[in-house]
Length: 144
Picture 1 (cartoon, rainbow, N blue to C red):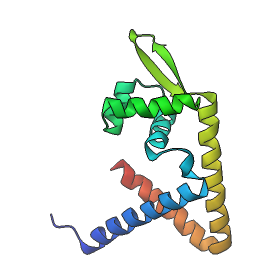
Picture 2 (picture 1 turned 90 degrees about the vertical axis):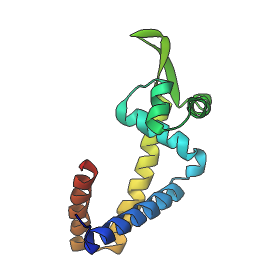
Picture 3 (picture 1 turned 135 degrees about the vertical axis):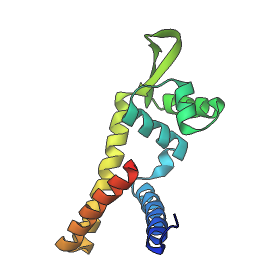
Picture 4 (picture 1 turned 120 degrees about the vertical axis):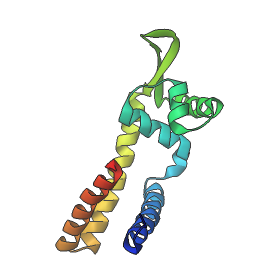
């Protein structure tokens, strides 16, 4: 089956816009505080819960040594905690610490406040409803 021009255009437009928005949100909440790898690991722990270092390395598609360095930096900042795996005493499970959860919550709040102000100041009510409808479609896309 050949891909239609509109499907190809939609794919390109979404890819470009998601990248731009991600960069802009990083600027808004000062992403210099964490590396992209550190942010990704924290977001994964927040979304999926505790995991071993090897599970995180596999999920992030990086070498175990890379995830070990990322975890060491996060642990130094007290953003994660390690606990023995109750099913396998040789392994440790990593999860967000209270400080890590607060850090993520604060970053999200700052980003959402920036977005809300931008929508309030630069878009009409009808345009905001269109964005909400488009987000439902993009959610469906993510599930595909």
